Structure formats: structure tokens, C-alpha cells
Length: 181
Image 1: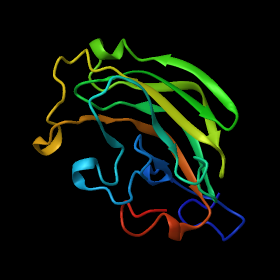
Image 2: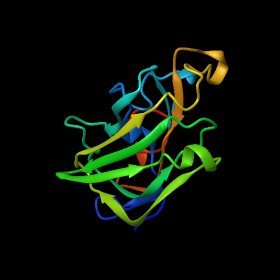
Image 3: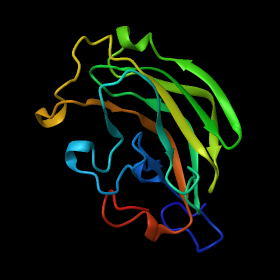
């Protein structure tokens, strides 16, 4: 473990999980070419106004894989939204699919809910990752929301991955915030 300045090739550095390691539900990298309206270098996504199952996070490299020289220690998800529209999630890491997690209770009783796994997951470099969610627009009665800055025709949701990211090359995580990795 080299923490913030790992030795080249033999150690990993550590930081928070970076949105730039993932593609959003439209298949665009969470940082590349995004405007402030669409969340720039953050976990916010602007969903169109359709209920149903959709892929919301995938690895950003070919074949929906995590980039080379990155490992992710994933312990949960946070949903810091005033209005919740995601009622369930399921995900796949490599060739293993994990069961559905029902989030419907959080629509009613929690202000900023989070899901913490009993046991975390390690997502290795060049490993397939995809997360699906069921987007339900029936709970708010307001579709679409105006969202940040008064834009409409989108449902804005944050799905924040909790944990840490380990990297071999510090130059790939430093520099401009939100720059493509």
C-alpha cells in the first residue's frame, strides 16, 4: 500500500471511488463531456421520464469493464436525493449476478438513505461490472421534476458508490476534476 504516492508497479494508492470509472445509463462516461446540468464529475444522473428496469452504472472500458490498474473495494450505495425514484437494484460483477435489493421502504421513511453490504466486494481491474435499477415515477406524482437549475424532462437521481478505489498510477487520478481516466 503506497497510499497517496505508490511506488510504480509494486504498490497501489488509495482514494474514494471515482465516478470517472463508470458509464451512466446512457452509456456515457460519468465525467466525459458532461455539463453541470447533467452532473459533470459527480454521481448524479438525469433519467428520461420512463418507468422500468434500466442499466444505471457499468464499467467504462470496452465490455463494461473497470479500467486497467484500478481496483475497487465496494461497501455500499448512498441515495442522497430529496425524491426517490429507484425502488430496487441488482448488479453483476464478472460472471456472478447478485440478487435484487428492494429499496422501496426508503421511499417513505428516510431522508438520505444508504445500503451497506454485510460483506463488501472487490472489483478487480478489467472486470465486468453492471448495475441495474427499477425507476418508478409513480411515487412522486411529479413527473418530470425540474431538477437542478430548473431544467425539465428529466428525473435527477444520485447513486453514490461507497468504498475506496486503489490505483497504480497517480497521474491517472490527479489533475482536472472529472477528466476522463
